[in-house]
Image (tube, rainbow, N blue to C red; front, side, top):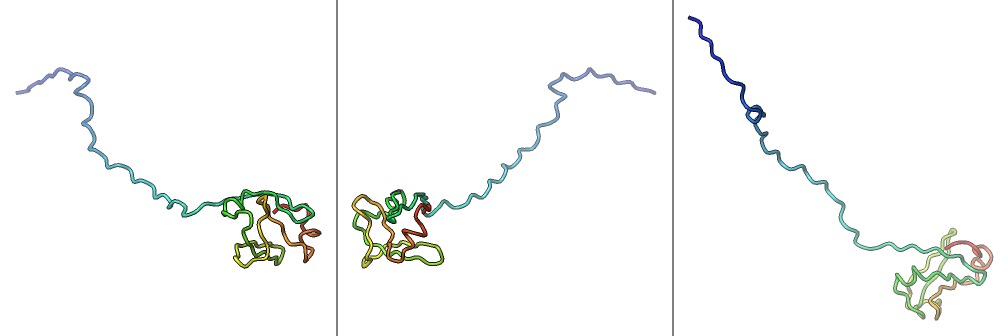
Length: 114
């Protein structure tokens, strides 16, 4: 005996595939730690008297007028650091004057950017 079974076509909603299993969330990227400090840049020309007029870096360091400093030069690099017994100071206007005794402030660096 041959049987024939006919069924109606199911409605469109019934033809959708079953919902996929819930996926786990994507992993988050590992972010670098926040900076522990800040970086400040300044650019100024050194005039013929050895004065650096830009006060951006001096203010960021908290150096007020009268702050004593140690200034040295070596291999074309000028290093300025806080020194309570230093002979150099931040001027009353908040500028930095490089020493002219060795001659490198007036001749070699005049017009250069610091």
